[in-house]
Length: 434
Image (cartoon, rainbow, N blue to C red):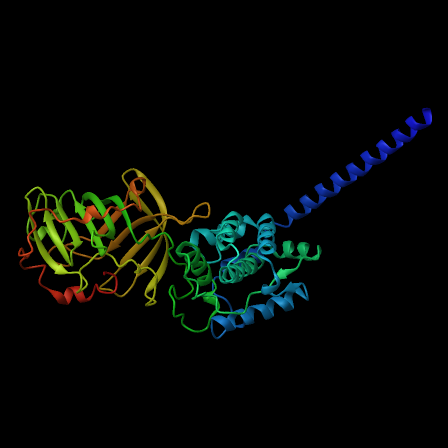
């Protein structure tokens, strides 16, 4: 019995020693990995360089993936595997591993500028897409290509050089890009599923030498928080009034818009007819109507067909290349101030600014404000179409009834001169209005 006790004591001591060694090794590994997350000056400078250098560009959307694969294979020296050889579950695990090793300092550079390298999807989002793909071969192929692009982007732009070196020592294998058109133009089966993949595919466009056929075009960053349909309260510093701003669809399913003003005195259109009273610009039933609810009056100003409608839902996609990022600016609503990203849709009669929150927690920010150049009676009387949104009231649930014409509006009621019969002014707005 004494011998058995001695044997057990030795075995227990040996196991405890082994456990301690394992714990120390794990602690050392974690400390080693954590230290490698720290970004160097070189890492940060590279992250701040937004335009890819010529050697990292391809002649078209397929060629750019071939070019980038060449760089990847040379850098990893045999530690790569073609995209089509990876199972979706393997790619998901690889992306999850890189998320655990990524440097937050690099994301802090990308996110405020809405840089296309910024992260807005997490491993859970990819898991949901894998479930949505099911066993449908076409969906699985599209998703496989998308996760390969995400994996290469994470490996290249979200790890410090020391982290990549550390992971190479673990014999890690890196997925390659698919080497096919990243637009996945045949993905039309599920709107939500395909829209997500389309958005992800556009992130690589900056590596193409040719002008992209599918907006957004250019190096960005691009706004991602604009909603094609939304309703929100607003305050207008230029018009000194408040009201409701909405874009959506009317009861006939056509694009519609509404801008209600507590007082239309500061508005270019409304003030030409009545002052000191509420006014609404209502784009519906083919026309932009001016409505004065307190007076039970309204009239037709101009047609949506000629460009006198609500904001075009695609006006920020930069199909014309006119959209330019202007940095950040403080937007004030009452006593609240917030820093918002700013763009200018250039060349349409002057400035047309759009302000948007930076992405937060992987989600697009909300619109902060829009501001288009306008005047009251003469160009010297500034009265911009400036609307600062109250984001606490922001909603994408826009009932079609919001755009119904009041019963006192008659089809035979036309607005008179001076502001509703000048089509030459409307021509300048066709690019950004429906």
